[in-house]
Amino acid sequence: MQVPVHRATAKVVALCGLSLIVAASSASARTVRRVSGKPVTITLSGWTSSPVEAQLLTKDIAGFSKVYPNIHVLYRPISGSGSTYETVLRTRFVAGNAPDVIYVNNGGESSTFMANHDLIPLNSYIKSSHFTIGDFYKSSLSLFEQGGKIYGIPKDQSPLALFYNTTMFAKAGIKHPPTTWAQLVTDAKLLTNPSKHIYGLINSVQEPRWAQFLSEAGGGVMNPAMTKFTLTSPASVRGYTYFVDLYKRGIATVPTTVGASWGGQAFGMGNAAMVLSGDWLNPFLKQTYPGIHYNTAVLPKGPVSNVSLTFPVAYGITRDSRNPAAAWKLISYLTNQQGMTRWMNLGLALPTRRSLVGLPYFKHHTYIHGLLAQLPHSLAWTFPPGFVQFSSTTMLNQTTLAIEGKESPLQALKNMQSGGEAILKSR
Image (tube, rainbow, N blue to C red; front, side, top):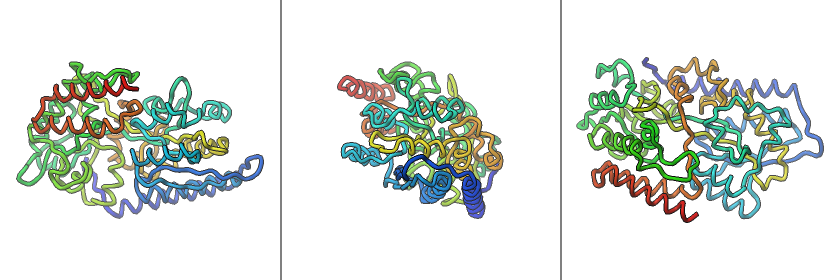
Protein backbone atom coordinates (compact mmCIF):
# COMPACT_ATOMS: atom_id res chain seq x y z
CA MET A 1 0.00 0.00 0.00
CA GLN A 2 1.38 3.38 -0.93
CA VAL A 3 1.46 5.76 2.00
CA PRO A 4 2.35 9.40 1.31
CA VAL A 5 3.96 11.30 4.15
CA HIS A 6 3.72 15.09 4.06
CA ARG A 7 4.86 17.93 6.30
CA ALA A 8 1.26 18.75 7.06
CA THR A 9 0.75 15.21 8.32
CA ALA A 10 3.67 15.53 10.70
CA LYS A 11 2.26 18.80 12.05
CA VAL A 12 -1.19 17.32 12.55
CA VAL A 13 0.26 14.32 14.38
CA ALA A 14 2.30 16.58 16.65
CA LEU A 15 -0.67 18.83 17.41
CA CYS A 16 -2.91 15.83 18.10
CA GLY A 17 -0.28 14.41 20.46
CA LEU A 18 -0.01 17.71 22.32
CA SER A 19 -3.79 18.00 22.57
CA LEU A 20 -4.03 14.52 24.04
CA ILE A 21 -1.43 15.36 26.69
CA VAL A 22 -3.14 18.60 27.61
CA ALA A 23 -6.49 16.83 27.86
CA ALA A 24 -5.01 14.06 29.98
CA SER A 25 -3.35 16.62 32.24
CA SER A 26 -6.63 18.51 32.69
CA ALA A 27 -8.46 15.29 33.57
CA SER A 28 -5.72 14.30 35.99
CA ALA A 29 -5.93 17.66 37.74
CA ARG A 30 -9.45 16.76 38.84
CA THR A 31 -8.16 13.71 40.73
CA VAL A 32 -5.27 15.20 42.71
CA ARG A 33 -3.43 12.82 44.99
CA ARG A 34 -1.13 14.00 47.74
CA VAL A 35 1.92 12.16 48.99
CA SER A 36 2.13 12.01 52.75
CA GLY A 37 4.86 14.12 54.33
CA LYS A 38 6.70 17.14 53.05
CA PRO A 39 7.07 17.97 49.36
CA VAL A 40 9.94 16.16 47.67
CA THR A 41 12.02 16.73 44.56
CA ILE A 42 13.18 13.96 42.25
CA THR A 43 15.27 14.07 39.10
CA LEU A 44 14.60 12.23 35.84
CA SER A 45 17.42 11.81 33.34
CA GLY A 46 17.63 10.15 29.96
CA TRP A 47 18.77 10.94 26.46
CA THR A 48 16.59 12.52 23.79
CA SER A 49 16.07 11.11 20.32
CA SER A 50 14.83 14.51 19.17
CA PRO A 51 13.83 17.93 20.56
CA VAL A 52 10.21 16.82 20.08
CA GLU A 53 10.69 13.96 22.55
CA ALA A 54 12.09 16.28 25.22
CA GLN A 55 9.29 18.78 24.72
CA LEU A 56 6.55 16.17 24.96
CA LEU A 57 8.05 14.38 27.95
CA THR A 58 8.22 17.73 29.74
CA LYS A 59 4.50 18.20 29.13
CA ASP A 60 3.75 14.70 30.39
CA ILE A 61 5.71 15.42 33.57
CA ALA A 62 3.67 18.58 34.01
CA GLY A 63 0.55 16.42 34.01
CA PHE A 64 2.10 14.21 36.71
CA SER A 65 2.77 17.27 38.88
CA LYS A 66 -0.92 18.15 38.79
CA VAL A 67 -1.83 14.68 40.03
CA TYR A 68 0.96 14.62 42.63
CA PRO A 69 1.56 18.27 43.61
CA ASN A 70 3.85 17.26 46.49
CA ILE A 71 6.34 15.68 44.06
CA HIS A 72 8.44 18.11 42.02
CA VAL A 73 10.17 16.50 39.04
CA LEU A 74 13.32 17.98 37.55
CA TYR A 75 13.82 16.70 34.02
CA ARG A 76 17.54 16.74 33.26
CA PRO A 77 18.32 14.97 29.95
CA ILE A 78 21.90 13.87 29.37
CA SER A 79 23.47 14.82 26.07
CA GLY A 80 24.34 11.84 23.92
CA SER A 81 23.28 8.20 24.03
CA GLY A 82 24.87 4.76 24.07
CA SER A 83 28.35 4.66 25.58
CA THR A 84 28.38 8.44 26.15
CA TYR A 85 25.21 8.29 28.22
CA GLU A 86 26.46 5.27 30.17
CA THR A 87 29.82 6.94 30.86
CA VAL A 88 28.13 10.02 32.31
CA LEU A 89 25.95 7.88 34.55
CA ARG A 90 28.91 5.80 35.70
CA THR A 91 30.64 8.99 36.82
CA ARG A 92 27.57 10.05 38.76
CA PHE A 93 27.20 6.65 40.39
CA VAL A 94 30.80 6.87 41.59
CA ALA A 95 30.11 10.33 43.00
CA GLY A 96 26.92 9.07 44.65
CA ASN A 97 24.70 11.67 42.98
CA ALA A 98 22.94 9.75 40.20
CA PRO A 99 19.43 10.93 39.23
CA ASP A 100 16.45 9.31 40.96
CA VAL A 101 14.97 7.92 37.74
CA ILE A 102 16.94 7.11 34.60
CA TYR A 103 16.44 5.63 31.16
CA VAL A 104 17.90 2.12 31.07
CA ASN A 105 18.89 1.11 27.57
CA ASN A 106 19.01 -2.26 25.87
CA GLY A 107 22.27 -3.81 24.72
CA GLY A 108 24.85 -4.12 27.48
CA GLU A 109 23.60 -1.17 29.50
CA SER A 110 20.83 -2.95 31.38
CA SER A 111 23.02 -5.94 32.24
CA THR A 112 25.82 -3.63 33.38
CA PHE A 113 23.63 -1.52 35.67
CA MET A 114 22.05 -4.62 37.21
CA ALA A 115 25.42 -6.34 37.71
CA ASN A 116 26.82 -3.24 39.40
CA HIS A 117 23.74 -2.91 41.65
CA ASP A 118 23.16 0.58 40.31
CA LEU A 119 19.40 0.03 40.25
CA ILE A 120 17.01 -1.00 43.01
CA PRO A 121 14.49 -3.85 42.63
CA LEU A 122 10.95 -2.69 41.95
CA ASN A 123 9.07 -5.83 43.00
CA SER A 124 7.78 -4.44 46.31
CA TYR A 125 6.52 -1.25 44.65
CA ILE A 126 4.86 -3.24 41.87
CA LYS A 127 3.07 -5.42 44.41
CA SER A 128 2.00 -2.70 46.83
CA SER A 129 0.62 -0.45 44.07
CA HIS A 130 -1.10 -3.31 42.20
CA PHE A 131 0.79 -2.31 39.06
CA THR A 132 -0.12 -4.59 36.16
CA ILE A 133 3.01 -6.32 34.93
CA GLY A 134 1.54 -9.32 33.06
CA ASP A 135 0.56 -7.13 30.10
CA PHE A 136 4.17 -6.45 29.09
CA TYR A 137 5.83 -8.32 26.25
CA LYS A 138 8.16 -10.89 27.77
CA SER A 139 10.84 -10.00 25.24
CA SER A 140 10.98 -6.43 26.56
CA LEU A 141 10.48 -7.01 30.30
CA SER A 142 12.97 -9.89 30.57
CA LEU A 143 15.79 -7.54 29.60
CA PHE A 144 15.38 -5.77 32.94
CA GLU A 145 14.92 -8.83 35.12
CA GLN A 146 17.58 -10.72 37.04
CA GLY A 147 17.25 -13.39 39.70
CA GLY A 148 13.50 -12.97 39.90
CA LYS A 149 13.80 -9.23 40.51
CA ILE A 150 12.59 -6.49 38.18
CA TYR A 151 14.90 -3.48 37.85
CA GLY A 152 13.16 -1.50 35.12
CA ILE A 153 9.71 -0.93 33.61
CA PRO A 154 9.89 -0.79 29.80
CA LYS A 155 8.47 2.50 28.55
CA ASP A 156 8.64 1.77 24.82
CA GLN A 157 10.42 -0.31 22.22
CA SER A 158 10.80 -0.97 18.55
CA PRO A 159 11.78 -4.08 16.64
CA LEU A 160 13.67 -3.96 13.39
CA ALA A 161 11.30 -4.32 10.46
CA LEU A 162 11.50 -3.88 6.71
CA PHE A 163 10.92 -0.34 5.41
CA TYR A 164 10.36 -0.29 1.65
CA ASN A 165 9.93 2.48 -0.90
CA THR A 166 6.51 1.89 -2.46
CA THR A 167 7.26 4.11 -5.47
CA MET A 168 10.40 2.13 -6.34
CA PHE A 169 8.57 -1.15 -5.86
CA ALA A 170 5.76 -0.08 -8.20
CA LYS A 171 8.19 1.07 -10.91
CA ALA A 172 10.00 -2.27 -10.69
CA GLY A 173 6.70 -4.15 -10.96
CA ILE A 174 7.01 -5.63 -7.47
CA LYS A 175 3.54 -5.90 -5.96
CA HIS A 176 4.41 -6.69 -2.34
CA PRO A 177 7.42 -6.72 -0.02
CA PRO A 178 9.58 -9.86 0.13
CA THR A 179 8.47 -12.51 2.60
CA THR A 180 11.43 -14.91 2.30
CA TRP A 181 15.18 -14.60 2.08
CA ALA A 182 15.07 -15.78 -1.55
CA GLN A 183 12.52 -13.10 -2.45
CA LEU A 184 14.62 -10.46 -0.71
CA VAL A 185 17.54 -11.30 -2.99
CA THR A 186 15.36 -11.31 -6.11
CA ASP A 187 13.73 -7.98 -5.28
CA ALA A 188 16.98 -6.34 -4.24
CA LYS A 189 18.51 -7.27 -7.61
CA LEU A 190 15.60 -5.69 -9.50
CA LEU A 191 15.78 -2.54 -7.41
CA THR A 192 19.55 -2.02 -7.58
CA ASN A 193 21.03 0.44 -10.07
CA PRO A 194 24.61 1.34 -9.05
CA SER A 195 24.94 3.87 -11.89
CA LYS A 196 22.20 5.90 -10.19
CA HIS A 197 23.53 5.13 -6.70
CA ILE A 198 20.39 3.14 -5.88
CA TYR A 199 20.61 -0.15 -4.01
CA GLY A 200 18.08 -2.73 -2.96
CA LEU A 201 19.17 -2.54 0.66
CA ILE A 202 21.32 -0.04 2.55
CA ASN A 203 22.29 -0.68 6.15
CA SER A 204 25.33 -0.41 8.35
CA VAL A 205 27.10 -3.64 9.30
CA GLN A 206 26.81 -3.08 13.03
CA GLU A 207 26.02 -6.18 15.06
CA PRO A 208 22.25 -5.63 15.47
CA ARG A 209 21.80 -5.52 11.68
CA TRP A 210 23.31 -8.96 11.07
CA ALA A 211 22.58 -10.70 14.39
CA GLN A 212 18.92 -11.13 13.49
CA PHE A 213 19.86 -13.13 10.39
CA LEU A 214 21.65 -15.58 12.69
CA SER A 215 18.49 -15.94 14.75
CA GLU A 216 16.31 -16.39 11.66
CA ALA A 217 18.56 -19.27 10.65
CA GLY A 218 18.19 -20.87 14.08
CA GLY A 219 21.47 -19.63 15.53
CA GLY A 220 22.53 -16.60 17.50
CA VAL A 221 25.44 -14.59 18.87
CA MET A 222 25.29 -16.13 22.37
CA ASN A 223 23.28 -18.72 24.27
CA PRO A 224 20.24 -17.41 26.24
CA ALA A 225 22.20 -17.31 29.50
CA MET A 226 24.92 -15.22 27.79
CA THR A 227 27.65 -17.55 29.10
CA LYS A 228 28.84 -18.88 25.75
CA PHE A 229 29.28 -17.57 22.20
CA THR A 230 27.50 -19.49 19.46
CA LEU A 231 28.76 -17.55 16.46
CA THR A 232 30.38 -20.56 14.78
CA SER A 233 27.41 -22.93 15.01
CA PRO A 234 26.23 -24.16 11.58
CA ALA A 235 23.00 -22.15 11.85
CA SER A 236 24.83 -18.95 12.82
CA VAL A 237 27.31 -19.36 9.97
CA ARG A 238 24.42 -19.85 7.53
CA GLY A 239 22.65 -16.67 8.65
CA TYR A 240 25.82 -14.58 8.70
CA THR A 241 26.92 -15.83 5.27
CA TYR A 242 23.55 -14.84 3.80
CA PHE A 243 23.92 -11.31 5.21
CA VAL A 244 27.50 -10.92 3.94
CA ASP A 245 26.58 -12.22 0.48
CA LEU A 246 23.97 -9.45 0.06
CA TYR A 247 26.85 -6.95 0.13
CA LYS A 248 29.29 -9.05 -1.87
CA ARG A 249 26.67 -9.38 -4.63
CA GLY A 250 26.36 -5.60 -4.80
CA ILE A 251 22.64 -5.52 -4.02
CA ALA A 252 23.26 -4.14 -0.54
CA THR A 253 25.74 -1.53 0.59
CA VAL A 254 26.69 0.63 3.55
CA PRO A 255 25.30 4.18 3.97
CA THR A 256 28.60 5.95 3.27
CA THR A 257 28.54 4.59 -0.29
CA VAL A 258 25.78 7.08 -1.11
CA GLY A 259 26.96 9.85 1.20
CA ALA A 260 24.62 9.03 4.09
CA SER A 261 25.49 8.66 7.76
CA TRP A 262 22.99 5.86 8.46
CA GLY A 263 20.56 3.61 6.65
CA GLY A 264 17.51 5.69 7.49
CA GLN A 265 19.04 8.74 5.86
CA ALA A 266 19.94 6.77 2.73
CA PHE A 267 16.34 5.56 2.58
CA GLY A 268 15.00 9.09 2.92
CA MET A 269 17.38 10.35 0.23
CA GLY A 270 15.92 7.81 -2.19
CA ASN A 271 19.13 5.78 -2.55
CA ALA A 272 17.79 2.72 -0.72
CA ALA A 273 14.74 0.77 -1.86
CA MET A 274 14.73 -1.07 1.47
CA VAL A 275 16.22 -0.60 4.91
CA LEU A 276 16.05 -2.54 8.17
CA SER A 277 15.07 -0.07 10.85
CA GLY A 278 12.84 0.60 13.84
CA ASP A 279 10.00 2.98 14.54
CA TRP A 280 12.47 5.79 15.23
CA LEU A 281 12.76 6.13 11.45
CA ASN A 282 9.13 7.26 11.06
CA PRO A 283 9.38 10.68 12.78
CA PHE A 284 12.74 11.23 11.07
CA LEU A 285 11.22 10.68 7.63
CA LYS A 286 8.22 12.87 8.42
CA GLN A 287 10.40 15.75 9.53
CA THR A 288 13.30 15.43 7.09
CA TYR A 289 11.99 13.64 3.99
CA PRO A 290 8.21 14.23 3.96
CA GLY A 291 7.87 13.51 0.25
CA ILE A 292 8.90 9.88 0.39
CA HIS A 293 6.27 7.17 -0.13
CA TYR A 294 6.94 4.08 1.94
CA ASN A 295 5.48 1.33 4.06
CA THR A 296 6.68 -1.29 6.56
CA ALA A 297 6.50 -5.07 6.68
CA VAL A 298 7.68 -7.90 8.87
CA LEU A 299 11.14 -9.20 8.04
CA PRO A 300 11.51 -11.79 5.29
CA LYS A 301 11.51 -15.26 6.84
CA GLY A 302 14.75 -17.19 7.04
CA PRO A 303 15.23 -20.97 7.22
CA VAL A 304 13.64 -21.09 10.70
CA SER A 305 11.74 -17.87 11.43
CA ASN A 306 11.32 -14.15 10.76
CA VAL A 307 12.35 -13.16 14.29
CA SER A 308 13.68 -9.64 14.75
CA LEU A 309 15.69 -7.83 17.36
CA THR A 310 13.77 -5.34 19.48
CA PHE A 311 15.19 -2.41 21.42
CA PRO A 312 13.24 -1.68 24.62
CA VAL A 313 14.06 1.21 26.95
CA ALA A 314 12.98 1.19 30.59
CA TYR A 315 12.67 3.53 33.53
CA GLY A 316 14.71 2.48 36.56
CA ILE A 317 15.26 3.88 40.06
CA THR A 318 18.89 4.34 41.02
CA ARG A 319 20.47 3.27 44.28
CA ASP A 320 21.26 6.95 44.98
CA SER A 321 17.61 7.98 45.07
CA ARG A 322 16.58 9.46 48.41
CA ASN A 323 12.92 9.32 47.47
CA PRO A 324 12.34 5.95 45.77
CA ALA A 325 8.63 5.90 46.67
CA ALA A 326 8.09 9.19 44.85
CA ALA A 327 10.27 7.96 41.97
CA TRP A 328 8.07 4.88 41.65
CA LYS A 329 4.94 7.02 41.46
CA LEU A 330 6.48 8.83 38.49
CA ILE A 331 7.43 5.58 36.75
CA SER A 332 4.02 4.01 37.30
CA TYR A 333 2.31 7.20 36.05
CA LEU A 334 4.37 7.16 32.86
CA THR A 335 4.10 3.42 32.14
CA ASN A 336 0.63 2.38 33.30
CA GLN A 337 -2.10 1.85 30.71
CA GLN A 338 -3.03 5.53 30.55
CA GLY A 339 0.54 6.78 30.64
CA MET A 340 1.77 4.50 27.89
CA THR A 341 -1.30 5.33 25.80
CA ARG A 342 -0.41 9.03 26.03
CA TRP A 343 3.16 8.27 24.98
CA MET A 344 2.12 6.04 22.08
CA ASN A 345 -0.22 8.70 20.72
CA LEU A 346 2.83 10.88 20.11
CA GLY A 347 4.10 8.49 17.46
CA LEU A 348 7.63 8.26 18.85
CA ALA A 349 7.81 4.53 19.61
CA LEU A 350 5.85 1.31 20.02
CA PRO A 351 4.26 -0.08 23.18
CA THR A 352 5.76 -2.64 25.51
CA ARG A 353 2.20 -3.50 26.63
CA ARG A 354 0.48 -6.03 24.39
CA SER A 355 -2.96 -4.56 25.04
CA LEU A 356 -2.03 -1.28 23.36
CA VAL A 357 -1.19 -2.49 19.85
CA GLY A 358 -4.80 -1.84 18.84
CA LEU A 359 -4.83 1.84 19.73
CA PRO A 360 -6.72 4.07 17.27
CA TYR A 361 -3.49 5.96 16.60
CA PHE A 362 -1.87 2.83 15.17
CA LYS A 363 -4.96 1.92 13.14
CA HIS A 364 -4.91 5.34 11.50
CA HIS A 365 -1.20 5.19 10.64
CA THR A 366 -0.85 2.19 8.36
CA TYR A 367 2.90 2.57 7.88
CA ILE A 368 3.34 1.33 11.46
CA HIS A 369 1.48 -1.95 10.88
CA GLY A 370 4.55 -3.88 9.77
CA LEU A 371 6.39 -2.88 12.93
CA LEU A 372 3.45 -3.86 15.13
CA ALA A 373 3.16 -7.22 13.37
CA GLN A 374 6.86 -7.82 14.09
CA LEU A 375 6.50 -7.33 17.86
CA PRO A 376 5.34 -10.88 18.68
CA HIS A 377 8.29 -12.22 16.71
CA SER A 378 11.13 -10.36 18.39
CA LEU A 379 14.02 -10.87 20.78
CA ALA A 380 15.52 -8.17 22.96
CA TRP A 381 18.99 -7.11 21.82
CA THR A 382 21.48 -7.41 24.64
CA PHE A 383 24.88 -8.73 25.69
CA PRO A 384 26.79 -9.12 28.97
CA PRO A 385 28.60 -6.29 30.78
CA GLY A 386 31.88 -5.27 29.19
CA PHE A 387 30.93 -5.91 25.58
CA VAL A 388 29.89 -2.44 24.41
CA GLN A 389 33.28 -1.61 22.93
CA PHE A 390 33.75 -5.13 21.55
CA SER A 391 30.45 -4.87 19.68
CA SER A 392 31.20 -1.44 18.23
CA THR A 393 34.83 -2.18 17.25
CA THR A 394 35.85 -5.82 16.76
CA MET A 395 32.48 -7.04 15.53
CA LEU A 396 32.05 -4.05 13.23
CA ASN A 397 35.58 -4.33 11.85
CA GLN A 398 35.35 -8.08 11.22
CA THR A 399 32.05 -7.74 9.38
CA THR A 400 33.46 -4.90 7.28
CA LEU A 401 36.34 -7.19 6.24
CA ALA A 402 33.85 -9.93 5.41
CA ILE A 403 31.60 -7.81 3.15
CA GLU A 404 34.70 -6.46 1.41
CA GLY A 405 35.83 -10.02 0.66
CA LYS A 406 39.00 -9.68 2.72
CA GLU A 407 37.91 -12.44 5.08
CA SER A 408 35.52 -15.33 4.71
CA PRO A 409 32.32 -15.17 6.75
CA LEU A 410 33.43 -18.18 8.77
CA GLN A 411 36.82 -16.66 9.56
CA ALA A 412 35.22 -13.39 10.65
CA LEU A 413 32.90 -15.31 12.98
CA LYS A 414 35.82 -17.33 14.38
CA ASN A 415 37.73 -14.13 15.11
CA MET A 416 34.72 -12.57 16.82
CA GLN A 417 34.07 -15.72 18.84
CA SER A 418 37.65 -16.05 20.08
CA GLY A 419 37.71 -12.36 21.06
CA GLY A 420 34.38 -12.64 22.84
CA GLU A 421 35.36 -15.77 24.72
CA ALA A 422 38.54 -14.07 25.90
CA ILE A 423 36.45 -11.29 27.44
CA LEU A 424 34.16 -13.80 29.13
CA LYS A 425 37.12 -15.63 30.65
CA SER A 426 38.62 -12.40 31.96
CA ARG A 427 35.48 -11.40 33.86
